[in-house]
Length: 336
Image (tube, rainbow, N blue to C red; front, side, top):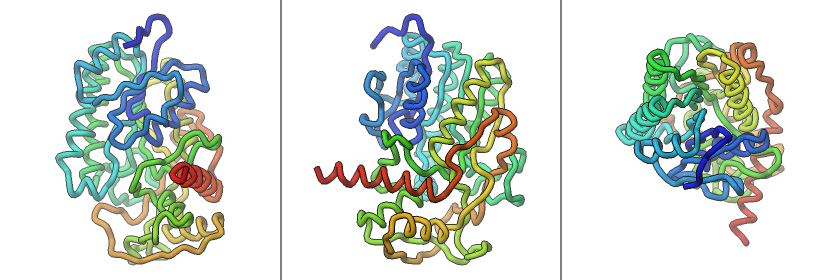
């Protein structure tokens, strides 16, 4: 491996994935030194910028992670690596607890042993389950309704406990629905068979899927379909940069929602994609999926005040336009 003498390094797990890839670009743009750890199960080598060391491996590989932290002089870890599909977690709970919870425990242990000072964790709004209050505040009860949500909540608990026992300041960021692509067109959601609604709708609009399925039309929402808070991936990664700045300046550990504070229904998203793309694609209606809450919208006051986070792309049509641009790139690449 390359020697990391001198400049301190940020280890980005899952840095060849959708959100992690955007994060790595942002960090490099800011002049940071970055190393990526990714098993490439859903990530892509091409998502990692030239000149950035990509180590192919598991976050649960204690010897590998220990060596990386030591040799690369890692001072901060941004932990994205995880399995993220809610219905899959219902079918394969033990796989999710291994990849999301057990592997995170190993990573945290390596961070403590390697004297890593800062840890930023990608958590999820799924820890809230079906929240009673909308928008949901960070201090709302955590009652996940899927193994995915539980696997992330368990990691939050481990990280908080480890931080109290050791010198490891952390920020837990609970993502709402991430969408869009790099505004500069360098990276985006490239996972085959992705389940993100805006990604799937963009694929349908560009003829890459025969139709789009709507799962459930009988929810207690204005139009009967699920309501979600969609956050642009570039605004989400900016929140991580703000979190790193907070920790480096001596700020304390925090748990924060990442969302805009307002939601859109599945049908509203479908209509926006149709309008922005100019394509009237086929929509089919299917039964509810297990593990899907009816409505979940972020209370976003805390992240704005604690990190001085200011979103730049809080507009559904802009998010959709960036997603469509990226999807067109992927279609073109497949045809070449």
